[in-house]
Amino acid sequence: MDWIVALLVGMVTGGLILFLFLKLTSNKSLLQAKQIAKKLVDEAHEEAETIKKEKLLEAQEEIFEQRQQVEAEAEKKRNQLLKMEKRLDQKDIDIDRKAEIVSKKERDVARLERQLQEKESYIKKKTEELNQLITEEIHKLEELSGLSRAEAKELLIKDMEAEAREEGLRITHTILEQARLEANRKAREIVVQAIQQISAEQSVESTVSVITLPNDDMKGRIIGREGRNIRSFEMVTGVDVIIDDTPEVVVLSSYNSYRREIARKALEKLISDGRIHPARIEEVVEKTAQEMKEELQEIGEQALLDVGIHGVPSELVELLGKLKYRTSYGQNVLNHSLEVAHLCGIMASELGLDVRIAKRAGIFHDIGKAIETFSEEGHDRVGADLLRKFGENPVVVNAAEAHHNEREVKSPITLLVTAADKISGSRPGARRESLETFIKRMENLETIARSYKGVERSYAIQAGRDVRVIVETNQVDDLQAKELARQIAKDIQNKIEFPGSIKVTVIREFRAYDYAT
Image (cartoon, rainbow, N blue to C red):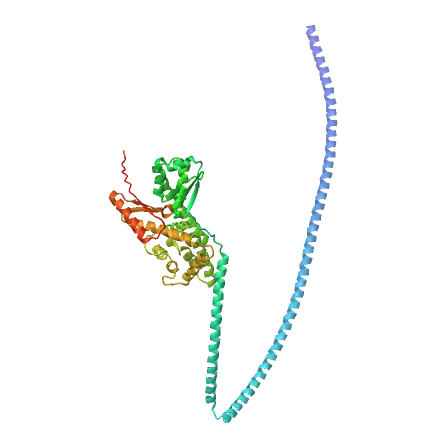
């Protein structure tokens, strides 16, 4: 028991000692914490003072800058006000000066009015005195002449009428003579100006087209076995194919530029494709002919665009494009028509006429030449009928019909077309007589052949030495074909003068078709 008491006493004593030690230690830590806290508070106060001073300085600087800006704005406003005051002062000065000028002018006007009134009074007074003197003189003249005033007046009027009539006749004659001279001069001037303002190309068409071949072997393929390909090509196109010793060249010959162009394009396609035989030739030629119609539309549209004409039916546009492949005495008809249209437009503008109608009449005046006709009517009547059919302006129709002075002229524009047509055709180098004569002979050969019943197509080739006539197989048999060739040859001999001889070949080809389905 004693050791337990001793243990308890020892534990109590140790606890007291530990308590006293912890208490002493906590007091020391508290003292240190208070010192640290005081130090932190002091530093916080110092930092707060520093921040306060810095913010105060920044605020002062900002206030200073704002004050400077306000002062600058105020100075600017003061300057603007000073300028406005100066302008107002100047305006006041100007107003005063103008008011003084107006006042002076009013005084001048008043002075002039007074002077005018004085002059009117003086004139009125002098007029009365003059009338009085005239009355007195008239009485004296009546007494001296023995004539009354009315009789003297009548005599004077008669003398004046005779003198005025003579003077009027003289003046009228002078005016008419001057007008005639001026009209001639003006007309020449208008024509010269019109000629100077256009510059159409001189395009003389030849009768041949040259095609370059990739090699000489192609000539044999074009000719074909026993010449069947070349015969088929000439029969379908109506164009003469000339193959000679010239290396890598084939020549197409025809007076008809349109047919020759179709043949040229078709042959180039066949050469490029390489397949050349009669059936293929017919197919390519037919396809090329259709493509040429589309090309004619483009050519016609471009021509109309060049002269500024719109609203033309597609059929007329195609015929206009076809004029590119027509010649008149060697002159390209489309170029000639464009030239005439420009000339008519310029002259119509100078004369105050309708420029649009004048150009339209000029471009369509030779449209009849685009139609292959076998009647006796000229291109002027054919063109007029065609234009009338499509509802063209009567002035345009009359210009086409009367530009060769074979019909009645109904409009001044027709006279312009006639003049422009002569100007375009008569310029040096514009036309060639020999080529036109040749083309006319070729056309007559084809016309004679087509005039017979049963003839489908006819082509004059070999410079007119050979006429190929293709007939309808259901209308002409073999015996009739032979007789037809004889009749055509006889007709040509009676109607056309030609050197040498002309061969007439009548071609009758029967084809039977059927389809396996």
